[in-house]
Length: 371
Ligand code: V47
Ligand code: SF4
Image 1 (cartoon, protein in one colour):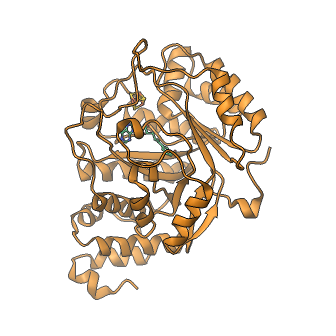
Image 2 (tube, helix red, strand yellow):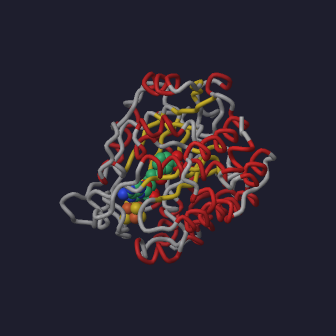
């Protein structure tokens, strides 16, 4: 399948051998792959790894996103979602509004994904109460909530450690952290785009502590703005290094930058080829993270479907309501039904597997988390 002559002719003979032998790729290998203009060659390499790990399975989850508030003290330049307190477009959902959204899901929900801005006033007790109440309404759903950036913000606000924040949230029902807020770890980029935000090392420290507390997490990478390909590879290498130590990452999610309504709206959105290349590089570099997500909300359904042949094995889920990408111009639907996702996956030639947040098959394990 990976014809040696074809890869040799592209100058990728050695990399092909490493991939076939399951050996780790270096940053220099990653740079050579990014420089390759033959997208099929990258796809074949990434697909061989994806197939070795997951066969024909393509995973999805019946989930619901909830953004509790867009009020944020950080003001990242790439964000179209956040507003300062008092802005006419600022919003804060009340506890009962959030619980209504959760209760309205009667479709076998197995994941609630809750994130928001770094709100200056909401106390940690608000989120503890919220998690406890959501748990009683949807006892089988995994509660995947609060990025490492929000956790660090809660700690600062309450003058306690991030470990204490996560222990309290875990006791209230938190199962897992989503992967947001990682952006790219490069100090050069963060200084330009999000100087107020928790820095790259800070993000990695919070996530390491989550893993040590038994809280699994995802990891994202925001690409397609001012970062270099080398900075993307360094971001992946930092995640790979932490994963070697903790094994706590479940899934990696490359997020293509949506420029509309942001301070970087002069930039063009990523192209489909750039997206597929980045997915393929993620699969090839992150040899110790089991799952690569094609997040259809930001990629579009069509590119996400194609990404299943470029190293992605997960399609995310039903989502229902999404604000962060859509406020920045994402053209995708707000949500998809289970049936629509299954059709997209089958049409691509894969077998849909409904999963929970930790990628246990729902069919094999029964629906939802064990209580
Ligand atoms: O943290 C902000 C990013 C993230 C923009 O863990 C932007 O399963 C693109 O993290 N264009 C939120 N991206 C999304 C996220 C996520 C999504 C789906 C699944 C999971 C998971 C995590 O979106 C933010 C930030 O990094 N973001 N602005 C923008 N204009
Ligand atoms: Fe706030 Fe997150 Fe938007 Fe940054 S990306 S401004 S931290 S909501």
